[in-house]
Length: 278
Image 1 (tube, rainbow, N blue to C red):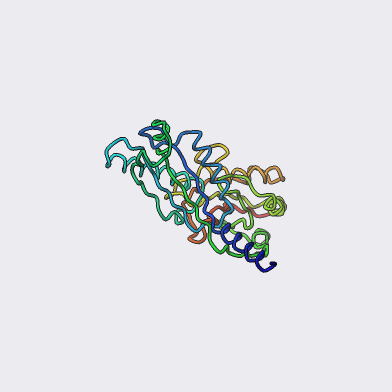
Image 2 (cartoon, rainbow, N blue to C red):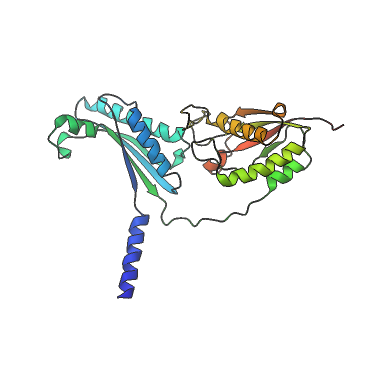
């Protein structure tokens, strides 16, 4: 009996691990702009999948049965593209989006419902399917390296650029995790003492199309790289670093590192001036 129970538990875990995450976004007649309430629902879904190790995302757009075939194909594609843009604006890796397609109309009789207007409303949609990586990759425990602190304590020259290692931002937001604030506190102590070093704090984002900035989910503004740099600036000022020694700038996605997308969600310090100590 015991082996059977273990087998059933394993089967349950297997099916659960392979479970796809799905979401639907509904549109107004003849529109591909996302309604405000649907946009809010979509952001909640994005928050839900932030920590999921994603294998792929498929995005399919649909229309109701009205309109010509060509019109419906174009409209459904525009709806799918609108959803893809939201993913991109919120720092989700576009390379995971394997299909972003407009499928045209859904026939009325597919849905069991008597109200024709309701049927058509349910057909004006985009279906999103998120497939997690299976089996899940084991999480690596990476040692915390004080490389940033060593560099800031060492010999600096104008033009040096230093990545603030181990500072992690929440996807789509400009504030740090609790653990990252401990790291930033140590960095602040070093910068308070190095009074002759002047620098610019540069914020970066990942995953947007081209060199565009991402959208800050808190303010809904397309200035996330600036907001991240400003967050670090304000934090350092609060810890005693003189404001006149610092500037901050948003670099958008001008300088991708070419590795894992999350590595582009970063902040760097660019040394702009070093005065000789008297």
